[in-house]
Image (cartoon, rainbow, N blue to C red; front, side, top):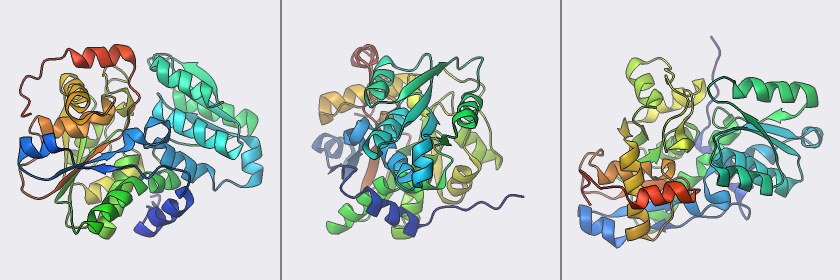
Length: 334
C-alpha cells in the first residue's frame, strides 16, 4: 500500500511565504444582509477577487515556483475546465514558463479565452470520449513537460490552503474563532488544503464541504470509506466542480477532517449567484457560490457562532449569469 504524504500547517505557511507579494490577500467580508437574514455573524472569503478570478492561482503558483530551472525550461502541462487552467497559465506567464492546457471542448468560452490570453497553448478534448489525464501524459512524454494536477498534488493542496490561513488569521486579529467553515468541493484540493490550515490553527471549527447534487463523489466516498467516482462527466452549471473523483491524498485529508459534505442543485447554485450580485455586490460563478447556496437553502446546521463561507471563483460567462438572474428562489431562507 502506497504511503501518502499529506500537507501540514507548516507546508501551508511555507506556501503563504512563496505567494507573498504575488497572490492577492483577498478580503474577508462581513455582509450585513447575511447577518440580518441569519441572526449571526457571517463572513465571506472572497476568492472570486483572487488573481485569475479564482483560488486556483494559489496552488498553481506554489507548484510552479518550486520547479528547477531544467523543469521550467521543459514547460508545464495541466488539464482543467477553466479555473486551474487560468491559474497555471497566469503563474507560468509570471515565471516565464511555457504552458499547455488540456481543456474540454465545452469549457466556458470566457475561461478558454482567458487561458489563451495568459499565453498558454490550449488543446481541446471531448469529455465523453477522451481522457484528459491520458492526453496530458502524452504531451508530457513527448515534450518532457511537468504535469501539474488540478488537486491531487502536495504543493497545489498546500497553496490552496493559504486561502483558509488568511481567513483564520484575519478573524483572530478581531478576536474571533469561526464556529463553522463552508467550502466548495470538486476534487478536494481546496477543501483538503483549507482543512489542513483549520486543523492546525482552529481545530474546534466544524468543516463542511459542498458539491453539486449529481456530482457528489466526495460525499459518497466519505460515507462508504472508499473513493467513489461520478457516473457523469458533465451536466451541471457548476463546471468548476466536475472532477471525476477525489484523489487518494485529498480523500485521506477530507476523511480525517470533514464534519459533513452537503449537496445543492443547479437552481440553488444559480440563485446563490443572483443573491451574491444583488445583496453582496459580488460576481461569483455557480461552482464558486455553492457554499453560499448551502447556507441560503438550510444545508448547514443552525448555529450561533461566526461562520465563514468561501466563494471560490467569479469566472461566470454572460449566458450563465443571465440564467442566474432569472432563477426563482424556491425554498431559499434569504
